Image (cartoon, rainbow, N blue to C red):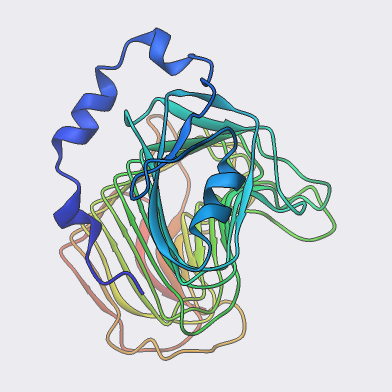
Length: 320
């Protein structure tokens, strides 16, 4: 397991540095030996070779700026995948095992400053990251224009932590396998999402999670340019934890505009008593008049709701 939080390890200056990168760096072609295992200093031509070199051990793979049509499967160990310059590394258009750019089933993984784009597979679940086992930390990453951003298996031992990342142009409900979402988290122990942005969804939910415990704080859910989207947060199996200090804007083009947040709409796997929904702001895009619920609750749980700033036409709580 990766015990240390990313918040303590990645200073805010990293985000500012990414914003200042020259355009040339963002489109640079990868150089030979672009993947360096920090501990050994060995360089590799492909990400998979670097992953295999670490194997069951622990290591950091530092990735040179460039756009890579590669993917990799991590079978074991603890690996940090780090862009040498945050925002300068993109993995695009390639999925391993018909799943994702990164398929992770080791002990743990960290993703730092990497962009994942244009990932599509026949079953509609093409993702930047498919987490099948272990812990996952993500910071300063970007997921865009794919069927899904992050998809996880159902494993009560797994924990996911996401910090200062962007999810844009994701989601679809056009496949027989069901809807894909910007983030789709299975039945795991805990999910934390902080200081991240969700925007321009193209179907499904922005954040769907069956995690037993959630912390969703200081994020923006901007649905103004979404198309065919559903809930902004869907906790279909019930959850405890905190949804706080988030900013929500519901757009016009919705498949389902009846709620911003849904709790317990499917099979209940976890209790929800004590879930805190507080100090959030929710409204519609300018000029839109309709009715919706901020929190739609199928669980009849004792949910704590306080300090939320809700626009006209939005009911703060609605039992269903």
